[in-house]
Structures are given as C-alpha cells and as structure tokens.
Image 1 (cartoon, rainbow, N blue to C red):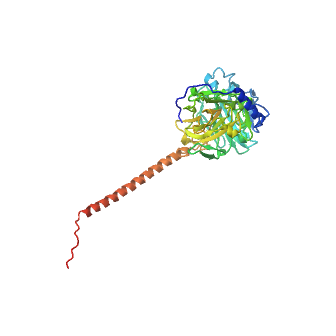
Image 2 (tube, rainbow, N blue to C red):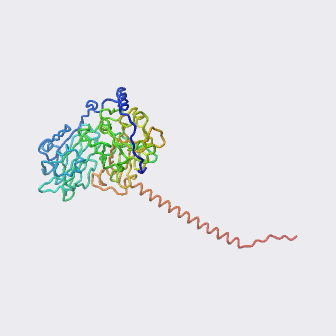
Image 3 (cartoon, helix red, strand yellow):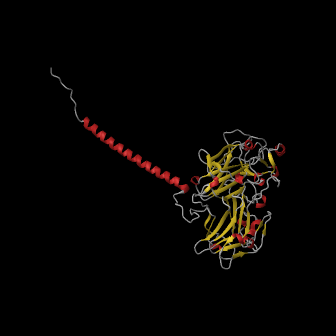
Length: 495
C-alpha cells in the first residue's frame, strides 16, 4: 500500500497508571522468563572469540568490556609476506559528523590502526564450536607515507564465501563497517585478503565470534502471493545491510548481548510526519519462554517504537513506511521486531505488515501471539531478488481494515535487512571463491529471462497455429465460393 494523506493528529487516551498496573500483573504471573535488563537472565559466552586490532602495537580495551588483541599478539593467526602497518593517535577530528553519528565513538580506537597487505595474505582461525559465527570487519583509510589506502582495491573471502570483491574505501572521512553471519562447518576457517592487480589491501580490525544456535532458524515466511515458506536458510551466508532501532536512539555494542550496533531510523522513514515515537522503561519488557530473547534483540529495542501519529483518527489513510537502498541482484532476509507497548488491554491492536507492497502478515495481533503486553515478538521474511524494484526494500505497517479494534494503529520496534549469498557463493558480485564468474543469466534473474523466452516461444507457436488455421479457412471459403457458382437442377424422370 502506498502512502497517502493522513488525518488530523490528536492525542490518544492512554492511561499510564492502568498501563503500568497491567504490566505488573503480567510480570507477577511469570509470563516472561525474567527482567529484560537483568544481567543474569541470559548470559552468552562465545566458544570462539577472536578480537584483533590490526596494526595496533597494544591491546585495545573497549567500554563494552571486550579486549582486542594487539597486532603482535595475533601474529600467529596471520600469513603474510610483509609487515606493513599504519596508525594515528585519533580519528575523531578527521571523520565526518554524518559518519560518526552512525558509529559509536567507543569503536573509534579500532579504526586508529591498520595492517596493509601488498600481496595475498590470510588469517587462519581454529573453530572450537562449528556453526554460525559473526564476522565483523572494520575499514578506514589511514594515512601512510608509501600507501594511499583510498586507492586500495581488493577482495576478501573465506574458504567458501566471497565477502567483498574489488572493494575500496575512497572517502577518507567515512568509516566502513561490515558484518557477516557465516555457517562454519569445519574446525577452522581462513580469511584471505587478495589485492587486485597493481594494488594492495588493508583492514583495521577483525572480530570472529560464535553466534547462538537459536539466532536464526532454517525457515522464514516467503514474501509472495500468497505468503509461503522459505526453507534452507542454513545453506546461506548473510551480510547485515541494516539493523535499526525503530523509534529510538543508536544502541552501541555495550547495550547488546552480542555486541551489535542498532542505528536510529530517522533517515529511513519515508513519511516521518505520520509517525510518533513511543517508549517505556526497558526493565518492564518481558521476554517469553520459547520465544524472543535478549540474544535476538536487547530490551532497548523492544522498549521503543514508532506508532501512527494520528492513531486516534477513526479512518487513518496511510502506512508507516521505511525504505532501505539495497543491491537488487540479491535476495534478503528481513527480520521485524514487535512489542506492544502502546495498548492498555489485550487484543486491542491489529495491523497489517507489508514488504515491498506485498502482504507479509494480515491482521497481526501481537498480544494474542505473546499472551501479554510488552512481550517481544519477531518475524522473519525472505524477499527474492525478483521482487525488488528501484533498488530498495520497503517495509510498511498499517491498520487492518477488516478487524474491529478500539482505534486503528500500527507499530514497529526494530528492523533488520540482511543480504543472502547468491548461487556463486558470493555476497558481492558474481565471482566465486575460485575466481570464476557466474553467468549473469543464472541466479535470481534466470527465472525472468526463462519466463520471457517461454512467452516468446508460446506467442510464436500461437501465431503459427493461427496462420495455419487462417490458411485452411481460406481454402475452405474458396471451395464454398466455387460450389455456390454451380446451379443444381432437380432430376427429371420420364415414365
């Protein structure tokens, strides 16, 4: 559904006292596992935890409690021909304000040093627990007397996945951060940096951390008409394109159990005038048994949301819309986070969810699914590349017209857009790990071309049949015309 005009805004009659009382009841009924802010609720210690500040002579201590090893301490992981390093005292004075506003300042020390590779170089890590791993790479083109890092072009790949192909960071005022989710099935993994011809490569910092098994399941809703099921997600590698705290501020790594960064949504909302940010104290968020946990998203995500600004209007005529630019040649996993922090009673909030104009969920009732208010819930969708137009992913929530509720409204708390690897085993282009290029006719566009070819063949066949039928019809008409030219006389019998 497209955005349209919105009605006049007016305040929604919500009693904070009743709201808090209801929440207290749900807490006392032990609907949830525990307090979302309690450090003892869910503790996660990764089996594999490699943190390297490349090029740094000393260990780096971050405010989230993690320690990144120095370059000398991590030398045993690296195979390289040369020892080329770059470093500065600080980058805070050279990074643009627009860039720094989307990167927590606590991560700046990781960009202050770098290791440079003039030839193919490789990090090798032992894996103590195979399975999903978070891989984070930091890039910033530091000054160096012999190497202009803004001119570096290189490929980054693992044993089976191309992460970056012909990659460069040409703007020395912007920080670059890449985050991946890889399924490591062996007891080791290699991370190779391969410069393009007559160029070089670099990296500022590396994280390789075990991810929880329950972070992603093997299936998701397939955005189509009708909505189906997409299976086999464990066969894909992922790159995080967007991770958004809707209606709230940036959440730095220290606010997330998996040290993720959540960006605000102010640059992504298409119609901000139609939205109103709402929030509640994070400690009233109640995680359910067998559902969302703080490892899925922190309570800081679920305690903020955007709702319709004029939700008190009887017939609002718009959707809340977020638009994200993406590479249209890839499919995407889209995770939406919901938590009803606006209702005063159960079954009071129903709304529809749309992905790229297609129905994702009709009449979503969070309180019924979670059996309470302020209880987190999330939903995964897969959007095929063939359904992406204008190079963007669009997520919308809007009132459900077919269901009676107190007042029409819709909310969203969090949003993640995650790129899926293609048939070449790549997250950046059509080149495989071996360096061979996948035929551009393959992959997500093949179906479109095959359909077009089939349509052309079918139309040609129909044309030939019609022509043949017309030819036969012409012959029949010619025969009838000849027959009508004869005059038949009745036979006369003479007796």
